[in-house]
Image 1 (cartoon, helix red, strand yellow):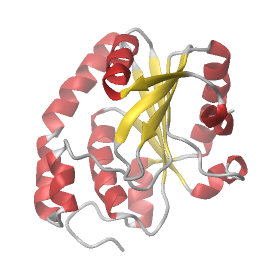
Image 2 (cartoon, one colour):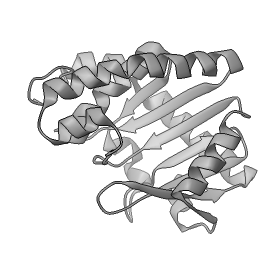
Image 3 (tube, helix red, strand yellow):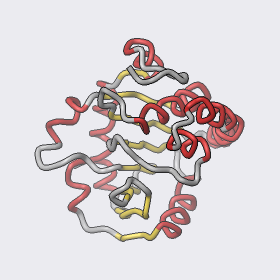
Length: 201
């Protein structure tokens, strides 16, 4: 089902509509699943990303550390409401500059309670015979989003599939991938992926 999400007809949401719809639904569920496949995104509204894009890695990571308090507050709210977030991150080596930065931010998120596992492209290869998997978010058991990006990797909106059968099928496949995934901390230690200002290895 994951590979079919891109071809299914859903409700197209512009960026503001997507954010509004997501926020309304998110706090009503007990769990979310996120599949991240692209290796390059742009996040121009995030100062830490901006510093990285300008080549200032030391400042980028310092600004990422300043995000910790906000992430911690968000996690406390999730914990209070019993919402479990799981993220599956497909990682290709050698790392893109974006992914080098994102893994540092994800380490902060994982430290604070988000559940994150890493997979290699080979784990999803059987679903990618005609192209890469889309970026997918599941909320609870009834909502699937295919997040839309432009060619530069800037989010533009999402396609909403409010069909419990689709969400159930996607959730089962993500759960199977989850069992194959490696905990983020273990991945960072095993691969020696840098989480400081060194150049990617």
